Image (tube, rainbow, N blue to C red; front, side):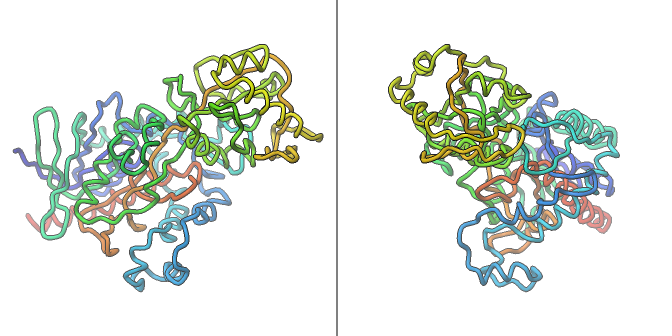
Length: 487
């Protein structure tokens, strides 16, 4: 088996991996990037996302940024241990060091470094702007890279290659090499067979949404009903998480959940999202409503609604829109599928086309229509136009479904990324199950655990960039002096 020494080995070439590689290279390290995909398909989820960023300017995160991340429901941890997490990490008890909750220091670092990290990325040709999103109602502020995630991958890959970063495409990381309780390298398999790469390791290879075995293990039988939201997710097999757990790394985040996005299962385009949920009625395959379609702005609520869709029979629901709903301004921007709507001239015909029980569907719509009250309808803001005496209610934008033609879209929960991952500190160092740093090992991006019950929207690309940059720089700083001493 061949063996090659380098300074820093980065696994994955999405935003986290590319940020790590560029940062390590800037710090003077020799850098190798390991990527299982071809260059044309490299970048994982980043290649396919629009890469929304929860920022109010290039320098400042959104006003709700820190509170939103820290208010994620994490179960019922011991309040005394939670108080300890506000102190310096060195003072934590053993129980606190292994507590599976959001780390204040990680969130604080993310908020403080977000602006400077985006400015740093701008130096590689990436441009950012406040561009229109697919959300017709919003709860926060966002920027995005011009050209989306594809621009991030292409610009940063080009910058890395121009600076001498070596990419090993079509090469898969298999296991970590350890020596005397530290990570000393990575075993990989490529076209020429297995090989050992020796150096400091930055894991940035995503979650396990592309691994059916791990989905079944952590999500049960419903795991087969949530496909990756884009083709990049199929490359995320979870090896990075597994190889770190195998040497005693600590897990973090909720291994039982994933970031859910409502998509049209008929479509093969990336993120064929159906974000028009608030303006219609959702029914399951039994022809019955099962959730409040409009508790608030769609950007803040679509994930929770999508989870309820996922829990329906076959993980499937239908969004039904009448002619009035179809006339909502810019509705098409919230319907990102390339498939046409299922159209019908009557509700009975719609039930037949959907294959749902006609009588149950008719009763559902009739009950809903009777419960719709009077008031001012405004699709551009939370309008409080709610149903009365209906369970489940519809809290906003509740208008009767009466005017033909009727349109419907099938909706499933797509798996954007999995929540469970590795525990890292604010320095992107991977921690073991006693809360100690695993020497020689860093991690960033979607393979690290940060979310528990609800995704704080537009923070994933940011955390990948911030902690990829941090981890790459620290790995290089550790590696280069070590090499100098060895010479």
